[in-house]
Image (cartoon, rainbow, N blue to C red):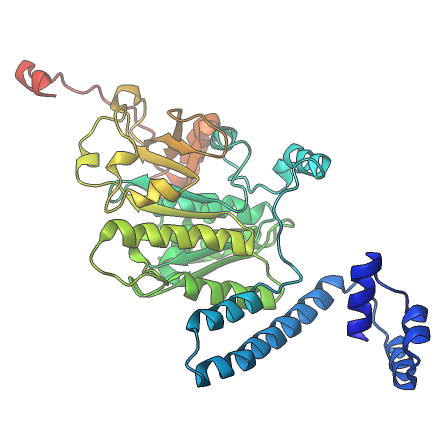
Length: 415
C-alpha cells in the first residue's frame, strides 16, 4: 500500500483517496485494515501534533535500523566506511518536522504578522525603562547576558526580573550553580515580602513573612517559579535539557530560563583543554542552542575581569568580560551593571549600559536602577517614587550620594 501511495504521489503530485487505493490493489486484507482504522476513535485535528511526533519517531527509528542493516555488508567486505556514514546521516535526515527555513516571498504576510505581534511572544521584565530598551522584553531563541564585577548585583537582577515575571503570568525557571535552592529562594522571600533579608526569619517577623508570602501566592495571575540547583562546575546544558523536559512532561512549559551562571558550567560537547576562550564560548553556544530547542529566552550572567573593576563607566564595554570573548561573540544581548559616579544621585543606585543588542539597537544607552539594601528589591528609573515610598516599609535609607573629592592633579594626568 505504501509503495502504491508513493508512486501515485510521484506521478500525480497528490495523495490518492482511500477508494482509489482499494480499487487499484483489490486486496481484501487492505479493506479490513481500513475498516479497523475507521473504528478507532481518534480526532486527528485535535491530536495532530501528537500524531506527527509519534509517526516521526517511528519512521526515524525504522530508517536508522535500515541504515545499520545496509551497513553490515560494507563492514564485512571491508568496504568504504564513508558509505556507512552516508547511510546513517541520510537516515537521521528523515524527519517529518524538518524546518525548511523562511520562504521569504510566500511567507511574507506570516512573517510581518509575527513581527507586528512580537510583543505577544516576548517576555517582559516588567521594569518599564529597561523593557523599552529591549523592545518590550526578551524574545525566544535568544541568549542574553548581564555582566558586572564580583558582588555587582548580577544574581539579584535575575531574581528581581523573575519575581515580576512570575506574578505576571509567566512560568520562570532558575538554574543555579552558585547558590543553593533555599539560598536563592530567600531572595524571593525578601523581594515579595518587602522585608529585611537578615531579620525576616527571626522572632515575630516569621508570622508577618508568612502572611505576606501567602498574599503573593494567592495573586490570580501568578504562575510557576522553579529554582533548581546544580553542583558548581559539574553541570552542562545536557543536565538542563533533562530537567526542562521533566517539567514539560508534567504540563509546565517554561516561558523563560535563567542560568546562574555561564562561567560555572561545563561544556556538554567540548572537553576542557585549558583553553578558556573556546570552552566558555562552547558553553555560551550550547545555552543559545537550548533557547532554540525549547523556544524560550535564556538569560545568564558573567563577570567583568579585574581591569573592568577599575575602568570608568563611560569606557566599559564587552572587552572587559572575564575569561572569554566568546560570550559577547555569541550573546544576542549584553549589558553591564556598574556605577557611573558622574551621574550618581543616590547611594543605592545601579547603572546599566547596553554593550550589545540584537534585540533592537540602542548600544551605548544607559538606564538607571534603584535598590533597597534590606529587601534587595530593585526599581528602575521610572519607579523612583515607589522606591522612596517602600522605604517606609523596609526602613532602608535613601541617602543622596556625596560628591567625590577631587583627584590630585598628578593622579588626573595618569588617568
